[in-house]
Length: 140
Image (cartoon, rainbow, N blue to C red; front, side, top):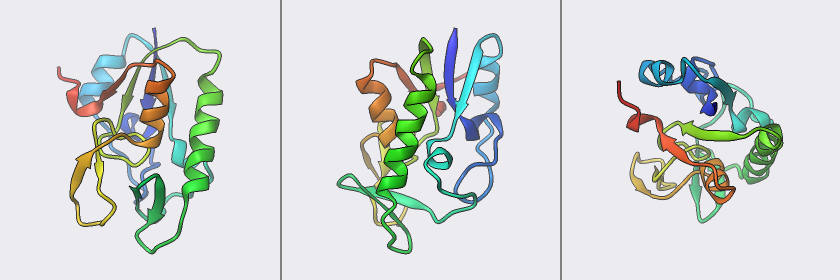
């Protein structure tokens, strides 16, 4: 079974701060499957490390006020192209991310406040009929 996973969850240092979100529960869950790690933000041309980004009304802004919406859209498009021919059974995504967040994202104020919503990649995957799961919902 093909499982798409946010690349940061499998230990790739692609997070905005240059780190990762390695998740042992996710690693245990995916160990017997074909894993496809993807980071749409890197695929969109954003570097690592990079300024943190939050979404407001479909616009992706850095904490310093730069609009990076085009980079986010490009990253999601490239990600979808990479999985186009693959049958993805499940996507396990990083919580609260402006691209990968499932059910909750930050509100765009850079104050750590959460609101209901999906990151751009999570939303696109759902619209394509691919089931998405928040990494925090993966338990041993």
